[in-house]
Amino acid sequence: MYYDEAISFIRENTNKYGIKDAKFIRSILALLGSPQDKLKFVHAAGTNGKGSTCKIINNILISASLKTGLFISPHLIKMNERITVNNEEISDEDVESLSFDIMKASKECGYIPSEFEFYTIMAMCYFYEKKCDIVVLETGLGGQYDATNCILKSEVSVICKLGLDHTKILGDTIEKITEEKCGIIKENSCVVTGKQEESAEDIIKETVKNKSSKLYFSEYNKIYDRKICDRYQLLSYKNIKGIKFHLNGEYQLYNLAVAIKAIEVLIEKGYKIDDSAIKKGIESSIWHGRFEILSENPVFIADVSHNPQGALVLSKSLKEKYKNKKIIFIIGLLKDKNFEGIMDNIIPLAKDIITVTPESERAYTSFELSDKILSVYGKNSFSEKTIEDGIKKAMKIADKDDVVCAFGSFYFVGDVISYFANK
Image (cartoon, rainbow, N blue to C red; front, side, top):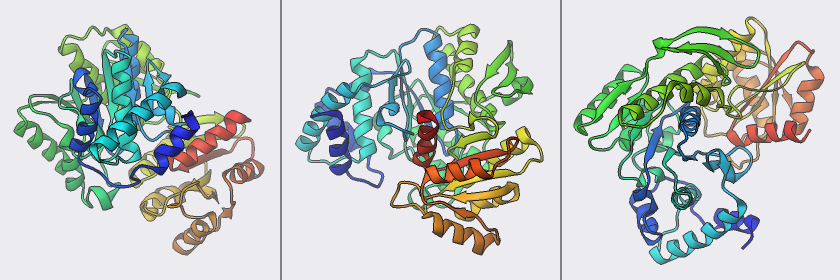
C-alpha cells in the first residue's frame, strides 16, 4: 500500500465524527504492544493556544537534548505534520507500514476508529519505535473522552486557555467544557494552567484536589521588557533576558508563560533543562498559521482563529501591532462556528472583506458568507469562489502599506500558506 492509498483508505474507512471512549483505543493499542504505557508525556488540553503551547514545550525539550515526540492536530498542509520527532515529520513509508498494522488490529478488535483516533494510535506506535524520551501530546477535541486520553499517566497535564467552542459536542457552558477538558488530569499528578474565567478556575482547582494532584499557575507577570519588532517580540522572563519570541501577538505571551511553567515542573521532577535550553527553545519556536506574516508590501498575515475567543485575540493583536490601521480580511468559515461571535470582533477593524469557500462540506460558500455579512452587519464584501482568487483580489485592492489578514479554519489557512509557498 502506497502513502496516498493509505491516507485515502484511512479517510474512507474510519468514523468521521464524534468522540469515542479512549478505552477502545487502548484495546487496539493492546494488540500493538501498548506502546503508550512505555512512554512519558506532557499532555495538553484547552480551547485556544494549546498548539502554540505544545510547540514551545517541544522545542525547549529538544534544546535540552531530549528526544521529543510531538503530536498535534489538525494539520495545515499534509497529515505528516501531526507526528514529529525532534521536529522531523513521520515519513510516508512509516505512515504506510503503521497504517497496515493498525487496520489489522482494528479489525481484530471489531472497532472502527475515527480518523483522529487512527492517527493517535499511529503516533503512539511511532514514538515508541523511535525511542522518544518524552512526548508532547495535544488533545484533539475535549479531554476526558479524547483519543489521546488513552494514556494512564503524564509527567504534567496542561490546561490551556478555555472558552466556548465545539459546544454541540462538549457542552454549551464554560463549566461543562472545563469539566471535559479536566478529564486529562490523572491521580497524583502535576497540573499547569494560566489565568482562566473564575468558574473554570474553580473547577480546575476542585478536580486537582479530588485527584490528589498538585496545581501550578503560570507566571505571566514574570514576562517583562517586551518590545514589538517587525517579525518577533523581544522580551525577558525571570533571569532569562533578551529572548526573541517569533510567535506574534500579545496572546502568545499567555501561551509562553504556560509553556515555561510546564518546563519548570519538569525541572522539579528531575529533568535537566537549563536557562540556555529554555531560551534556545523559545527562539526556535515558529508555528505556521499563528499570526504568521507571509509577505510584505502589503503585509499579509495568516491566522487559524476560528472561534470567538480566537477572533478576539486576533483583533487585539492587529490593533496592537498596526494601531489604527483598517484591515483587508479574507475569510473562510465553517457553518458550525459562532458566526456573530467571530465577526463582532472583526467588523470594526475591516476596511474590506473578501469571502472564499474553504474545502469542506461544512463550510459556507463565499456567496452565503457574503450574504450573511450583509444581512447581519450591513457591510458589502467581495465574494470570490476560490482561495487563490481571494488572495489575488486582496493583493489587487491593497495599497503597499495596507495589511491583509486571512483567517478561519485550519485547512483554509493551510491552503493560503501553500499558495505563498508555491509562489
